[in-house]
Amino acid sequence: MMEESKRTFFNFSFFKIDPKWRWMADLAKEESAKEIEQVIRNSKVKFRAYSTLGLRDDAEFLFWFSADNVEAIQEVISKIYLTVFGKYIIPSHVYLSSTRQSMYAKAGRVSSFVEGNDPLRYAVVYPFIKTREWYLLPVEQRKKMMDEHIMVGQKFPQVVLNTTYSFGIHDEDFMLAFETDNLHAFQDLIMELRETQVSRYIERDTPMIVCVKKDIIPLIASLG
Image 1 (spheres, helix red, strand yellow):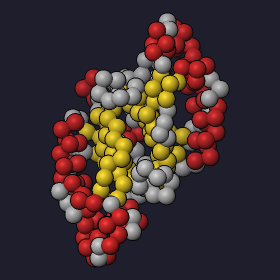
Image 2 (cartoon, helix red, strand yellow; image 1 turned 60 degrees about the horizontal axis):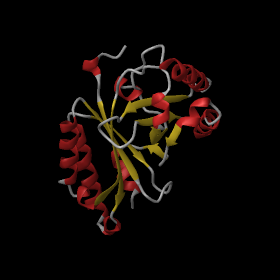
Image 3 (cartoon, rainbow, N blue to C red; image 1 turned 180 degrees about the vertical axis):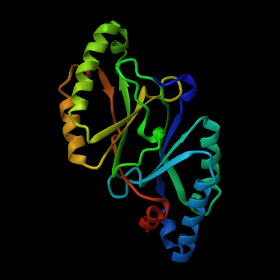
């Protein structure tokens, strides 16, 4: 079981790059990438970087942060903005959430990110909102539907789920971050989940953003 003291904040910050960045000298861009890498390394947060380049028109990369408090996340983002690279980035989607114990899962499960597991090749990140009618259903009825939902997920062990909660701290109910090395498996999982009873009570689950794992320096180099 996840203890209260172990709860952790997640921040998913998606950015676009100012086209002016591409006109900078290559050496200056390389030095800027190293500066960002140093800022992240010296921060007090857990961090992963992903590329969304060419996969959407509203984001080109994701910085995924995890910390014990929101101030630590703010501090590292502030330091990023103070770098040369930081002058050329524009946030397009920002989400805040927190880990906590699920009331439906029979066994406690700690987020793969929090556990420090190696990231898989892809992450699919999206906000998730259930209808208010869902929360007015009897708990046992909800648990029965969630058992079906969980059983479908267990058919796809190659897909790892990081579920976090945004109630009261952001606009959505949950933030979901699925990790996998096989996007086709993830697509098959989502199609099966659409046929479960819980699907009746989904109000919104977009934008659904596919992210490709990249380290900082090659990520920044890919931006042109």
